Length: 153
Image 1: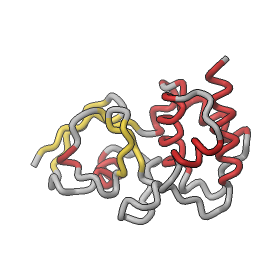
Image 2 (image 1 turned 90 degrees about the vertical axis):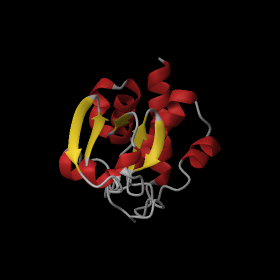
Image 3 (image 1 turned 180 degrees about the horizontal axis):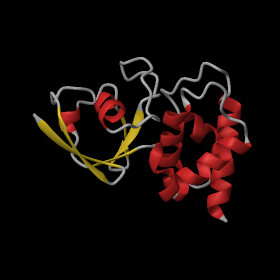
């Protein structure tokens, strides 16, 4: 079946089973590298992408259910919030292995778009379900706060 997707503003037509996870189509057909396969069960957050500004876990979201624009970190240059997060994550050295970071940044974008100055408890609550096994959570929180400050200027 041909599935039509809008990914980062580009139209993609893919011949795929509609039950195929969105993640597979993003990585294999759209050459998207930011969304990662972590657990395959929607429990680690490394596959998070935006579907019309709502976070979806693409490893467990069927491509046939996509109705809207999918946005990934590859769109950061045209998105002020993602650009600020990118700069802040680098400045705070919030990345160690980097596997969880795309999902964390996607979730942080949604938070900062709603609340430019979130508290630490609010940041922690928004990142529930995102696992970082390298232990950079403190730096991730600082990076999100830094991005919020940059956006508020």
